[in-house]
Image (cartoon, rainbow, N blue to C red; front, side):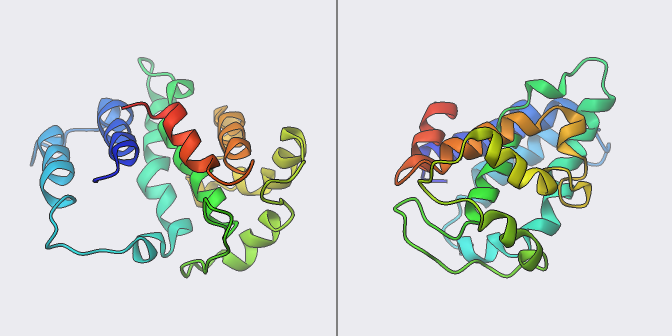
Length: 188
């Protein structure tokens, strides 16, 4: 939460994209809960956590954390799913993470996930800093983006696949690309 772009990303997902479609359970106020999580719990230095632990089993978390929000947008006459921009950015970031190359171009070890053996072969066909066109990249990751078990929805059917692919293509251009994408789309 000390990283300005990441904090802004999380806040926009919660307040701008998630909260408008949250069903109030009547037990606690959703906005107050979000305030507590983002302003008290996560920034608490006495609650240590690591990016490696957070990244564990991500393929099992995306449908619950974001797929339900997308479904709520699809079901809502007041909200347009195509207005979502931060959730697709998270999906693109996760795909970029699965390449196991950091933003400086160095290899790293992925956290455990039951679908690594299924997902990583697709991403191994994409070269960090490579010359594939957006269309070629999109064709390569299409089976992942269509997987409703991962995202809770088929991203092609929602209309969000193109945005995810565009963000992802920007993130693979070379060293510093992930940070550049964050700065471009998540202006604090």
